[in-house]
Image 1 (cartoon, rainbow, N blue to C red):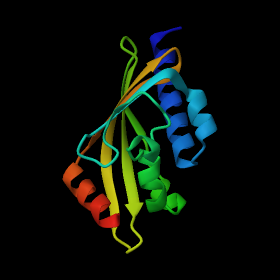
Image 2 (cartoon, rainbow, N blue to C red):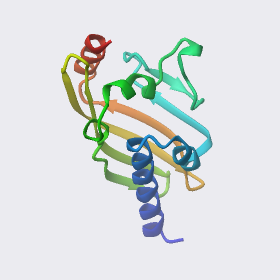
Image 3 (cartoon, rainbow, N blue to C red):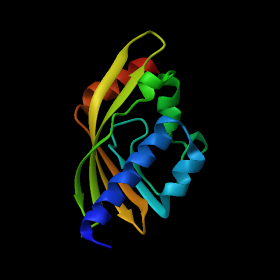
Image 4 (tube, rainbow, N blue to C red):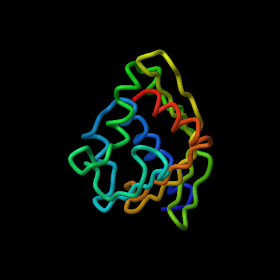
Length: 147
């Protein structure tokens, strides 16, 4: 496989993952994720930390990204992430995606902020994800007020 095809494949994989997340399709998401998947969120967020288990939830004393955002994204407009692949490194399998985190509280307060994700593809599946929010303070305030 040529490097161009590898980069294209990695880009297509990441866009398919974002599509599954936006559509709230956990079956499709699991198909695209490596069995040894790990995810890293900023520790200052309510769902922050590093995890290998896709099923992190309140039973483990931790709130997941989906558990946090599902109630704050009642429509497709809030779930829309507008992902854009900005870099692919075929040698390392890394892909950088710029996307939007959107939400709306029950009180009508909105959040719309950019996020840069560093992803690693291994064996044609997503193996690692690490998110970098541009303004974690504003996001943490929004989440605290929305709770």
